[in-house]
Length: 179
Image (cartoon, one colour):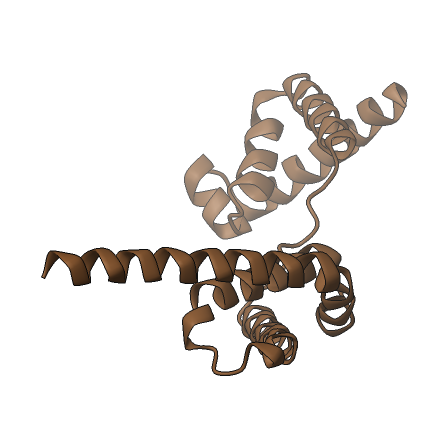
């Protein structure tokens, strides 16, 4: 029984050596042409190289199952085509299920300008009388109606309109001076 095991191991190692030699020879003779074939199919050199290398690995591991070693190049070409198709199918699925692109973010410069403008408005708000400032903040920052502002400040709706109009004019004057 031990003799057959040794013979099987010896046979297996000679088959592995034959596979190594045959695949190495195919690789040296046909690697570039197979990469060109894959590149034409997948339109990407890096992916084409991966497809071809995966095909060679599959050929090497399945060498014993290959019935006619003369058809090894044909098998490799078909493997490259099939793996290229798989890559293209995968790309199609990824593209179809890709998340929607995020809207363009404002630039850092835009953010700096907006911050500067906000700080200018806040500084100008601080120069207003208290009632005018309250009326503007409640109207434009709290987004309250004139009736809600009148209730909150305990003044009439007419007084809210008056405070808001005067505050807007004062802000416009202050901000135009700064520009």
